[in-house]
Length: 384
Image 1 (spheres, rainbow, N blue to C red):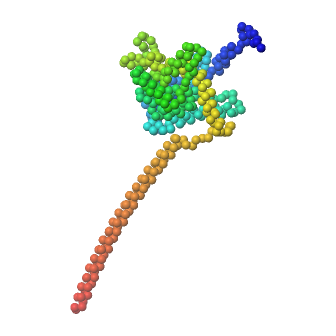
Image 2 (cartoon, rainbow, N blue to C red):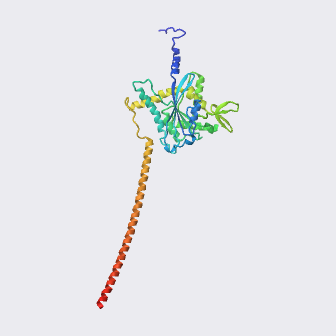
Image 3 (tube, rainbow, N blue to C red):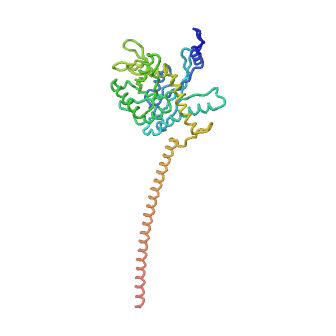
């Protein structure tokens, strides 16, 4: 049967993308971005520079390490609503202060991993409810892991955390403060990080490369070739030698520009996160990471059953170990005190025994003297 003739104007199927665009533009979208890394790597500055507005307030440098004795990783949530050309984005930024800031960072990633899993769990529970009109969605769409620019390679903590994050979220490694390394050292450091990521089988976000447009394909290849992204964070305006006002850092040797691709990968990372692949990050979270979590939970739980709570919280373990250690020390102190008291009693007993023996000897000597005197008196009485 031959296909029926269609008018040159069509029936309107080609207008479906336009309809979809109108719906999306009306609703807006939610985007959740998590930043993980040690203190002092410029995470707050980067977020503010990325969205060209103050999303997060900078912390007081003097109080940055005031809570170091707590040894806890916190979860800070900052919400903002951005608008551009009548399109709204409800942005959520998740920060993790305290991560990697201690000598012993064992299990420091658990609060971060648990937060990501809890958002999947919360969304899954909402989907199982009879009424699902207004679902609260805080699933993390992208996680930027900030790497300290040591110039060597990834630390064991970096490897461990990136392994656990890569299987749960769209992980994007970022080299912070790239202007502290020379171009040659930076390229060597990037290569070493890529080698470790490949050797350790760490899952990082891979954007779609192929596109109908050759220009888009080239752009995607250039973006992925820059990973891990080396960035310079600055929200201050400086004057370039040619008179331009740019975001950057002023040094004695010149200016490091934030948006200059010859200086860092900031523009490529911003393009990946916002301009070209935000939708892919959202859909990958929905179709891959959330579905993996949902499937793993459905295989081990009944429908509607609550997630079992883990009782082996590392924070409680540390507190238990500290209490046990303190109890052991107190027991040892009491034992030492008891031994000293016992030794004191033994010494006092020995002293009293010696005094008693001396008194006994003295009494005996007195008795002997008395007997001698009595014997002398008796002999004198017999003579009379």
